Amino acid sequence: MSFYFFYKLIKGEHDGIDLYAPLGTTLYACVDGEIYDPYYSNSYGNTVSIKGKYNGKTYYFFYAHMNAATTFKAGDKIKAGDIIGYSGKTGTSASGLKTNQVHLHFELRTEGTRVGNRIDPFIIPELNNGVVKKPKKEDQGWKD
Image (tube, rainbow, N blue to C red):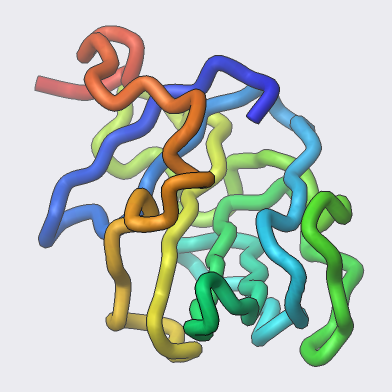
């Protein structure tokens, strides 16, 4: 990751990580695979999932709150490093924040369903590099 991101991971309430970046920051595919179920929801906004393999196991890498709908369609092949969209604040990206902050909500899922089956993305060491895991509360924009 080329930006200095902060994240929050609250098991049970927030099963993913939030990566804060300026509006329109380029989002890249983190794995080779295929596009799985791009959709818009009131909570996640513009989303896309990449169905890909890591160490022989299939995962679904989920990106949410993108600035606009992805141009990819379900089944399209994608390579790690391909541009899949841009950071935004679509959906209810303000939940728990002082303001509607631009960020990427990222999840790792074991199945392709739209809910559930989420696991800690940091089980994949390559996703663990360059992320501040103990950010200052004021940097997150949290409400007390």
